[in-house]
Length: 329
Image (cartoon, rainbow, N blue to C red):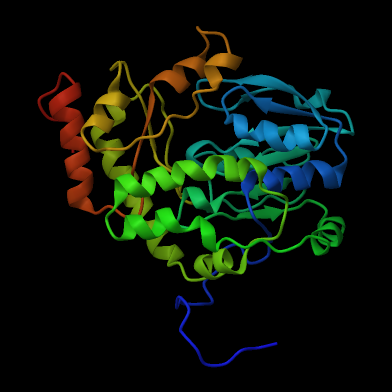
């Protein structure tokens, strides 16, 4: 039944969805569970350097798993020829900077591309690919899935119920009203909610929000901010990751010799996440992955920030934490 009149709902623009040909699910981890179940895998390989939330769908799907290492270029140190027909490997597009490499993996076996940090990366034919747009935009939940076998996936997809997400928006609304601290508390409360979230289709609210975003503007802003930060920090960065022409980064991954930089930046109001605390419990203490988890600082370069914001972030890093009086800009 369609209703008429009454109060107005949230009004959003329409017709701008980016991954319009993908299946729409309610979370990235559930997209991974969908992939595992639909392909009936018995085992999956995943990098040490990844979030432990990926274990939830793996365990729920009853799939075995094993970790593998990555090199200092963030590429897998993995022998793809060992994959059996009922096995798959998760390859992570770290910080949205590995698009070209991902493209070279076509035909290498059962590959699951984790594009949670690479929203703008195009899916590659023959590989299951999932996205977590919540890492790029202010939305309550949601995921996209580009399946390698679309006919099979669509049959399973039609059986899913649709989610509702209106009650996961409090932190977004509070932040809009500049109640950042209170909004963060609400954001943290969502962690156990996502842990238990059943596999469902994306909610109508999340879809409408994703259908209203200026994706071209976001792309341009992120790329410009990344280049500005790299110009200033590149010579101090132990990672050498070029920004390819079509890549749209999640953040600027800054791996330096400055100990405790993350905590110092947070104390100055520059909130930088840790990717990922659980890694130290998986990988050896002297591994590259443990170094990343402990010392990599993901500097924000997203669409919320203009030149003056980036300058302020760089000045904070320069003035407080590096030996140079001023970083090159």
